[in-house]
Image (cartoon, rainbow, N blue to C red; front, side):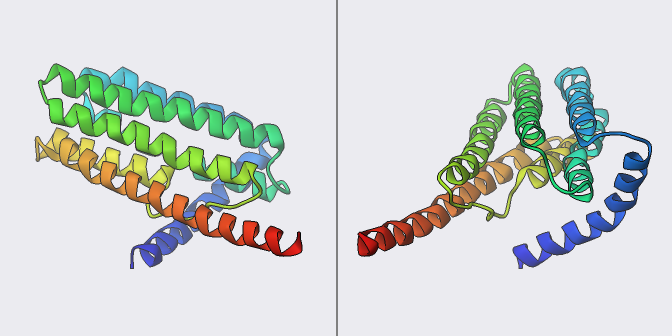
Length: 211
């Protein structure tokens, strides 16, 4: 059910993003420029607003600019595929943005004395990094790890929703969202590790047979 919802949501986002991507390409905007702009926007939302307690503004800004992660990929596909440097830049900027978001959240929660919220934010930061690392390492070994229920865009949206809840109606909304995301991130990392293990086992068995 979660996978069906994820696919449906992404299909809906694609219908919205593709016209924007075509327009930007017509204007001469490159996918790399969108990647850097999106990261800058996330930094502004996280450090300029979220870390200072302006959770609603911070959440809205981060969520909007996080969607550029889908936009630059769509633009690259329309241009015939991502370049090696484009893929490298995108992954690097993602790590910068993730660090800013969860660092800002952890800082704000610490100022409020919410130590359990800080713990959850740190788990999210480490878990998100692990999810990304497992995929990158697998691809470096010639395997794939394109599985999991909580990829980067979904993770940032969950944090954004938690920030909106805390800023508007539910004071503990951000902490609850972080613990939910922490569980999803660790589960996703586990999904990817199992997926890679199965591929590696088959590859190793095939190598033994051929040898």
